[in-house]
Image (tube, rainbow, N blue to C red; front, side):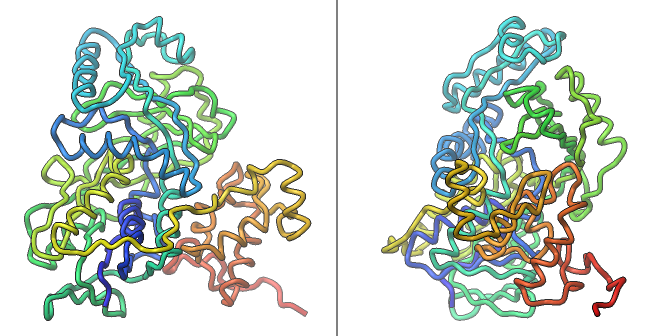
Amino acid sequence: MYDVAVIGAGVIGGMIARKLAAYNLGIVVIEKKHDVATGATAANSAIVHAGFDAKEGSLKAKLNVKGSEMMAKVCEELGVKYRNNGSLVIGFGEEDEATLKTLYERGVKNGVKNLKLLSAAELQALEPNISKNATCALHAPTGSIVCPYELTFAAIGNAMDNGAELMLDSEVTAIREENGHYVITAGNATVEACYIVNAAGLYTDTIAGMVGDKSFTVHPRRGEYVLLDKEMGTLVSHTIFRTPSKMGKGILVSPTVDGNLLTGPTSVDMEDKEDKSTTPEGLGRVMKEAGENVEGIRFGATITSFCGLRAVGSTGDFIINIPRHGFVNVAGIESPGLSSAPAIAEYVADLLAGDGLKLEPKAGYNPRREAMHAFREMSMDEKNAVIAKDPAYGRVICRCETVTEGEILHAIRTNPKPRDLDGVKRRTRAQMGRCQGGFCSPYIVEMLAKEMNVPYEAVTKFGGNSVVNFGRTKEEI
């Protein structure tokens, strides 16, 4: 019997699990996919929003500003890359200028610090490569960037290191109440828990329906992105937004914490909750509008394109409530969900306490975690010392990103442990460079097979039937 079952292992479920792991509680995180951070967390803009966009008084506004203020400390504790680069919302003409003034006033009411409206000259001084047609901007110095899936791995890993359990490949198909607690059918297992936190992303409405709550729905909103090589990574220093519309913040241009340049996303409402395909029309729009906002983007330096699906709730705000004793919905967590994640975790813990869960601090709880990228940030002397102890750190596997065998093995052996190629990629950046895994993938497959004690042919790209190798072309002698 667990005290709390968290359904969904994205950044929201991960941050909630980490928060609850600080208390004397039995916690299990249940995820239907082969790895954590594979839903909306794996494909979004990676922006820690300042908090000026959400309507004042909304949960989005309250939790965005608080979460943004918490993020630097959370990332420092978890060893996650974080960069306070600031954001700029640029406008073209009088109509946009009026909208930016409204955003400024809303941001002030929401408690965002140091907002400033800029003239065209002030904007160009901050970002020389901004379109010369831009006439105004809103500057938010507290805007930042982070790696969302790295944050999730660290949060869930930290929760596991403090006693939480993780169940993968465990889709929840039924929930029933029995003798004052919940019985959850998850994959081939049955899980019993006193409390449930429903953080299932696009499927939160389905999970809520299992306990009779039909008060909201969630639909996907497609967002397509184009990621460029590191040679484009310094074109802008701020995150650049266009003046927003009712469908979102438009096509952004932003550096990433790993030194690339990210452009996107589109914003198209969908019905299919699994369709992550990109389209020529969507990618064309990204390139066109990004080029209108920032000059000098060379899309010939594109490394990859991808699509993410945002979980849009039917209420227009985050849906965080208790429809019945022991069951907490955390639904409709679209943008600024990533920014709000640390504050959402605290909010949910408070809701659970108000619903009767005893939060007794755990002796020996450790909120800290070693960075997954610690080796590459060491000095040359420090690296040589590590290599002397473990020669695997001296063998480069991914040439594009300079990731060593030792780093990959460390990731494979660290909670939450990856079991496929994409899992290793997101944890180490091996396969994320110019060749997109063309050189290093066979070596990583071999390492995974050995570590998991499975046949070479059994290793997958992202779980399920996504096998990489169907058989050997040559027999060993």
